[in-house]
Image 1 (cartoon, rainbow over the protein chains, first blue to last red):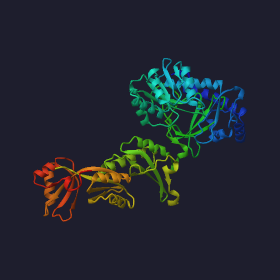
Image 2: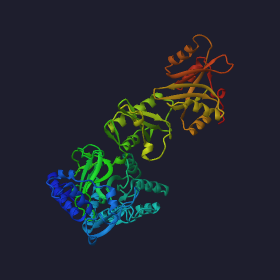
Image 3: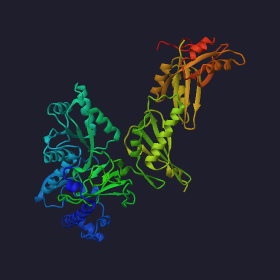
Image 4: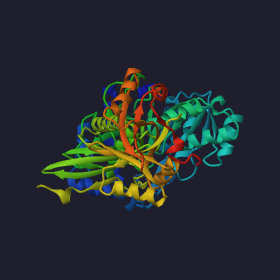
Length: 434
Length: 145
């Protein structure tokens, strides 16, 4: 642990610290940010809250609110105090700009040092930062964390995979920071270059900035013979350093002394109890440049109840399983189709391609999941196919907590588009019995 | 004597799908000698003996079907009461299990040919030893593929 005084702080103390910091940030945005000042006034809310539970009365912030403030209007610090800006990638619309004060940069370095330390890194390590440097938060975020930790920092940035491999081998890199898919590409490129990636000194990696699965973790750990750690962050909240797995690799510890996490039902927007799936919402409680109150990330996860064996007291969020924009409601239950994909990657004999067909039988919603059989299946074995169908149905049902039917369909018969419309076909309005 | 190659085709439960399969084979100038469709409530499996199993597999896969080649035994069934029973008794006496069976008749032939999916390759030996006429690939389909 890099900062055990915070990472393992007793819960009561942590919550007292959160309350104090939350009050301060509510005052900051009320004083400096027109959007929040108006929203608080309209709702009759005062920054002087009595308890953490009062947070749930405050309005949400969404991406469009930040966009409307483009480029600097959403900042809550005078430009004089801003020392750096980054921006989001803009993949889902106009980019947003985020600003950091020197205190923000300082905290960020600590949080990324925590992240690297939770992957086992120390001042004796050599960290290859393969996240892109520039407006993207990944490269500089990891860079400052690595330097704060005292590790040797290689600011190689992304791209030129052969050079990445050469540096891994020649510089004796022990910790790799990049996206999980790039880690696989690096391993494969090493093999093509005649270098067995298992023989490299590399021993751990901190991977994030894109969703990945447990299967992909296994693949990376095998290919590179390392421990692969999932990290989470987004520029609107900080960048990398919001949450990270520990050596238990069971959920990502949220840095709760800097960020308050809530899980809310994406429909009702009411907070759900720990353990239940919903949309992740963050409130930054130490940020100065661009603090956000109840920012809806659109990411779907849940809090893993219980204490972690690693000794950290911060709560853990599960690996991101989807986006709230994709959610469907079946018989009153929120269902995230991306969970189906996760289930399918763990079952042999089927491809992770599916389509969900929603229908109605009388007043009841019906769900039929179409799943592709793997091309190398033995199609003569009817019983094996029936067993496969039953396995797929049971596994999906237990993941979604909704009863479904499964239809096995021919290999490669489902369109390979990622779009929501293709994944879910909703016939309920046509078949409606009520 | 060898086992013969049967083409097993996964069929989704949707109208016109079997016709699609038959049309595809016709387009590739492939002639079916035997066809058996097994179905469950959710999907079907078509089992085909044809004159060029590898070409059939290729064509059907190109059309999007899930296809496997399955090794089966083809044996002539004497044309008299009890003919099939004799064949099956030989297998039973030698502890060879039959998973499924179906029969077809070649044009102008005096005997039927029974196709047997067995769990033991010794089936051919024990049938031959008992005087049964096992049919090899050369008499059913082209081998030079």
